[in-house]
Length: 322
Image (cartoon, rainbow, N blue to C red):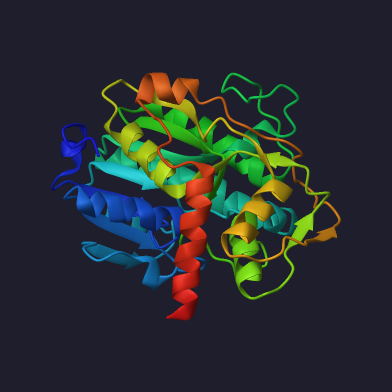
């Protein structure tokens, strides 16, 4: 941990929307270690109280669509990490209006409250879904957005809102385009569970995992610890960030079949998936060019795919045995 750079977090009031969720709770945990006074806003529609680490100063149960909740929570905050969202592509296809309300209107309300409260910087959980089926790999931030789902469209809109607020107010903003994040606390029980979490759950129950498609589609899988590093680096970056966009991945691509084999091998289980039809909105291949984040933020993924998968499977095995 870069203790000198992260001294900006010590004793600072820091708000995390969606802080009881998968990524938000990991950011909260790291900020508590930095001495921050962490405030979590979550409506617990998908987050869980058991995810929240010890040491969080305040937990506010409420929606990012509630201006009163936002004003009371963000008042006095130095930084805001905006993680609250509808995060599922299939769910966004089924419920596009709800997706837009949460992800677009919600982001606008968080930005308005942050600007009014004099927040120094807002860090936004953007998405690699912005690239769609980008034919040129690796994906670079200068590629034109190409939304293949309402979810992707909502995240692109969020990035544009961050740029507009940074141009019209003193609020500094930065968007981090997450690629395929995995790690502990990722919910495997949702109908829209992320692939690695769903694989782990099925394998440890002795069941066949399902792959939507032929399994040869590729993704840039990034351990959640790396994503937390990126968030703290973006918040503490001394440069004047005005809606800047950064890819957060590893720069390495892996097929779903390769990932499944690695996970099954870690627990001595057979890798024998059920192949189902490709889902609407899913992209075929994705991998990040992380040079901009490396050069401007100092981002370097410290946890590789194999180590991250091994640690995840071990943690789930221990939890299941306890």
